[in-house]
Amino acid sequence: MTAHLVTGIGELVTFDPQHPGPLGVAEDAALVVVDGHVAWTGPRAAAPAADTHQDLDGAAVLPGFVDSHTHLVFAGDRSAEFEARSAGLRYTGGGIATTVAATRAASTDRLTARARALAAEARRQGTTTIEVKSGYGLDVPTEERLLRVARTITPETTFLGAHVVPDGVDRSDYLALVTGPMLAACAPLARWADVFCEPGSPVAFDEDESRTVLAAAAAAGLGLRVHGNQLGPGPGARLAVELGAASVDHATHLSDGDVAGLADAAAHGGPVVTLLPGVELSTRSPFPDARRLLDAGIEVALATDCNPGTCYSTSMPLMVALAVSLMGMTTGEAVRAATLAGARALRRDDVGHLRVGARADLCVLDAPSHRHLAYRPGVPLARTLELPGRGHVE
Ligand code: NIG
Ligand code: FE
Image (cartoon, rainbow, N blue to C red; front, side, top):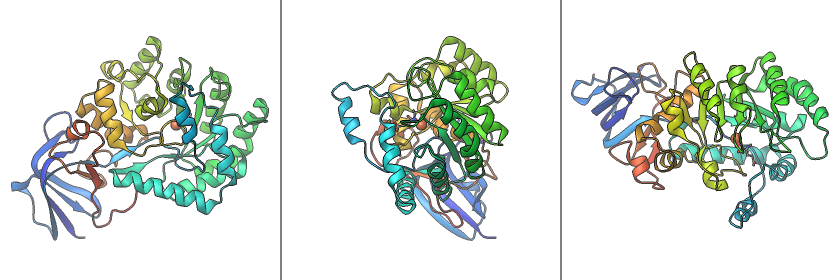
């Protein structure tokens, strides 16, 4: 059991109440890692002896980012759809069919190589935990294949057979497939299930359909997540509260009743609200009102939603910068949302913070403070710190 000492940490964000402020910050700090876990944090001057040592020369260190919402497994290209938005095309979800066709036609090796490349890209920007959904197969063999690929990247895999009703398939037949044979084949490969609940969209699922999908998934032992209130007002957030989902994601269009329901539920571990500002950036839509949620006492997470349609970015630092400059979050709130709250959205307590016992997943900034993530948008400041015993994104 070797102890590794990291010194020269100008600002160490831990979320440990033994250090001051809402972020639990230690300054001029050091950290000791034993067996890949945090064993000690505190001022450099008080650091214990260790077997190995590295110095970061004043860099800021945060918990690695937790990207709790991605769709990394896909093939094909939708840059033309993105381009068409500059001429006024609105996002409706209709382009998902293009990705489904390309994904079905791609070999598993090709899908794996591309998904792994995206996960590596995320890691280079400080992401150490990542969730990955299926949802571009929409038939039993392809959904199963996508989850097998996802499992080579992360244990946080999500079955999203209920992404949209595929072209040429009857709605009720598809619902029976998703909640029957597809769920049976995919549940053993997934930790979570998700549904695109958007009654205004001709391709996504309405309240009753979404409830049916989520209830079947819960009965199969999966935890629940919801794509809700993305394109307009709807029942997604309410359903997430009703069914005890871990998270409702997008949540751009929430009513006062939705916010009140989420705030009530927050007192007893209700859904985290995961905002995905890269989607608003890429689809040219109004950004969600993060302030309203935070002021109501709701846990807000930030994630990339990396996918070929609504946000083809793996960059958590970009999401932090957008949240601060365009959504009214403070830099501290945005860093919490990208780390601790992301972990809560995945119901994980071993990541997203640097309290003693946490996984030593560290994000190092080429900057003296977490504030620089928003202060210097688009600059590649963040990286992960490779330590003995800590490896790939999970
Ligand atoms: O989270 N809204 C639903 N699904 C994805 C986008 C899928 C796509 O357009 O390919 C999302 O934004
Ligand atoms: Fe999504």
